[in-house]
Length: 101
Image 1 (spheres, rainbow, N blue to C red):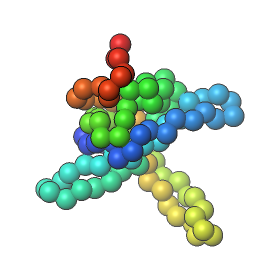
Image 2 (cartoon, rainbow, N blue to C red):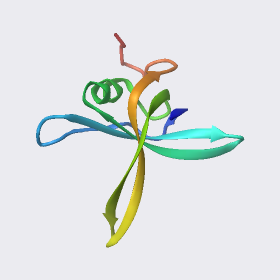
Image 3 (tube, rainbow, N blue to C red):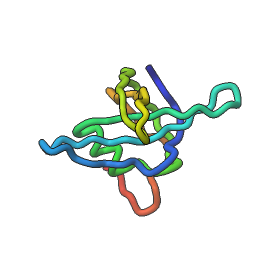
């Protein structure tokens, strides 16, 4: 699946107990004038790069696979659907004060 949209918040980079980087970020896309919101997950080096250069409002193109998982929210089981990033491209200028390599 491919998405082209803008990050709805600054990406959240964290590390698992074994030291693997994992990043989550929301992406808003525009389909026929209607916004749609998507949950995106990236792992390892991809997570670190998006975490370093990605910021709220920055445009991003991602390609990946859809996964789903169950999670508990206030005692209710909710099915969460994520796009796991396999390839990405950050578009537009870098945020102020960030120099890309």
